[in-house]
Image (cartoon, rainbow, N blue to C red; front, side, top):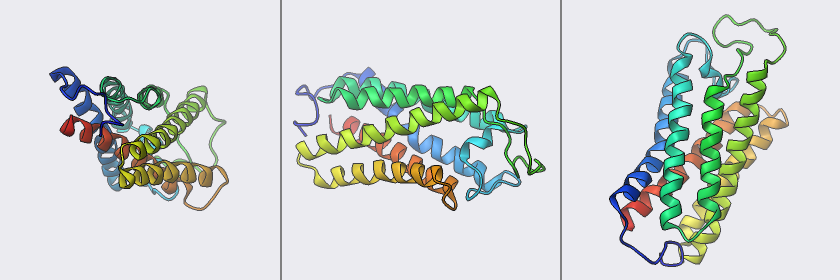
Length: 213
């Protein structure tokens, strides 16, 4: 992978630790989010975005999930910056980490049907809910761009299979986001699938580089 990784294939223990953090970020966020989606009363992934799990009395768990995942992504980006020849992939992953942290701090409002008992008519969106939407958009588009940057570098490394996986992951999030924005059916599900795919691919990249460098 010499076209993809810096020429020095001996990395420090601190770099390995940073890459390990990046490798954990995606699986951890996905596991915690999906576990809550399966157990929170009234939650329906075809109607409710994973972000709304931050509301209600157990909402602290999803808030923490966002913040921890964001910190892990920032650490992973720092590790990738040390081993990748790419300038933009680590930067974009760092931006997505900042967006995740902001999305955790700026909590969504309750939406019709969730938390359980929320009426069908809710007040106008609060400032922090608007902030959450902006932070989420920043996170998504940074992840999409990072995946497409990684397509180029995996191709230059002679790894067409990984380049294809990067393209699929980025496109899954882009398509899911656009589908939801147009009001498509089960838009929250398509966003969740795309976001998880992109996060898992970024984490897999960090894990692969940690193992191979």
